[in-house]
Length: 455
Ligand code: ASP
Image (cartoon, rainbow, N blue to C red; front, side, top):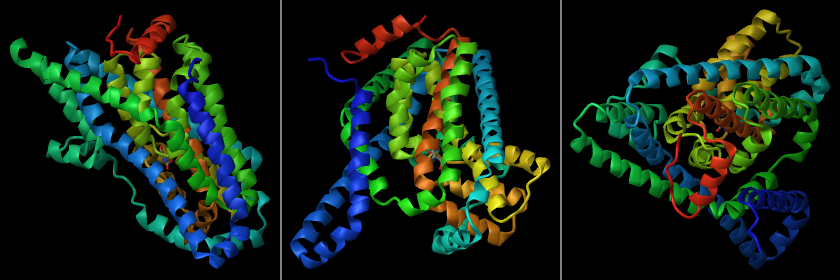
């Protein structure tokens, strides 16, 4: 019997997690007295909860373990195989430009949606104040964590003063920079010196990609654990109260994912949605379950290179850069959230203010780290940029906090999809994208042995 494809397995894990998580969520009140009555039962339940937590965290740690070395080694190989720096700056320029434009499109989409549905007008003033009081603690924490990124400092920070510290701290942009420079320099030293270094980096890249394969075999179970954990603790009442807001965010994200990206792909590359989504499904599902584009990075790279057929050189540059600076889903969500909060408190944000949101949210998304919940911290900066009063910001953040994890899952999937889309566009423009047949053959062979095959 043929084994079910990985993304179906993950989807089943996710659905099972949803059902079990909802069961736990809804039965909490009924189960609490039973647990109080029986110490043995409480111990068993406590153990199962810990185990589920442990399984999810272990999986995420295994992926995070891979992120830095895979970027370093694969980018050294990628950059050293380029024999002109002009090509590198062309790829770089094109990548950053598309990232910025798609992010601005995403926020604008969010703003248009929020102007149409006016989610803030669906929550009564009473309910608003009640929700704001309930989430006050989390709001204070988020507001304290927010510091506006300084553009110059962000640019300067790309160049590390100690590359080993960058590796140790997982500063992805710095790692990309170091690997690019090293790879480029390897093309300038005599071949007998460069070749062994490149071979080592190449061998390590292959070994790490194999590790991604192995870890992904456990993904369906891990995803189950991650989803149970989130859904079991989800505030269903808050979700119902903020239904219009949540649906507006989700509808905007769906439009980006299923209309805007496929249209760009069709227009610029000819790659159809079936091929694209089939190739990147594991990365999307993982992004959804983990709410972290950084943790998903190794899988995103694997999907783009092995399943979609982009070259190593383009993948190892465009994808890590995207996981660090390109957050279309987050930006869209920030647009909707900003308007929602203003509407809740009866503040009118005119066209000028909304343009300010487009600008700040584009910049803020560059400084947003690809880990769970950072989007809401950066939202504070967006809210500050349009001059919302402190108490409105605090109240607003407190209110949307209750549904943030769920929306984080959705926006992270879009963040990762956007990275894959741009990688496809850049690879196609560079003539470094396999045809569908070549990519399928390659993906089939990747399970048996690593291959290197590019036009
Ligand atoms: N969790 C998102 C990501 O990793 C960032 C965010 O909070 O919006 O891409």
